Amino acid sequence: MLWIILISFLTGLILGMKGKFIFIKKFKPVTIITVLLLFFMGFEIGSDQNLISKLPEIGYLALLIAIFSILGSVILTTLYEKMFIRSDKK
Image (cartoon, rainbow, N blue to C red; front, side):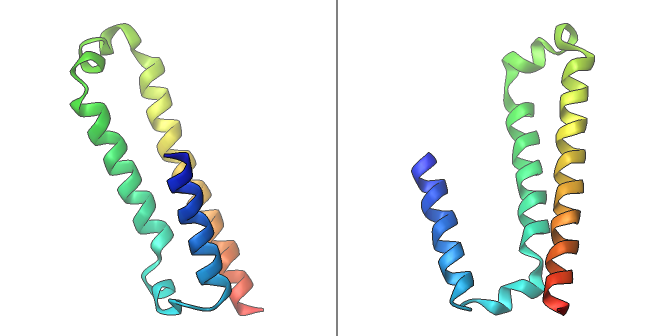
């Protein structure tokens, strides 16, 4: 799985440097991918019956982890987009 991630990253980096697929920028792919990531994370957590049955034991810690995961993703995505847009205007 690590190799797939690294190959995908390098492919995107090379295509970005060569100016290919510039039209993708208008769709805000970072936001779309972040929302999909959060959806699938919630889906995996919700479909794990073992985890759901232990939820009262895990309690507030699980809630805090989920909240901070979502907040971190949203905040870092927003910061990235603001920096990316700012670098385009230069």
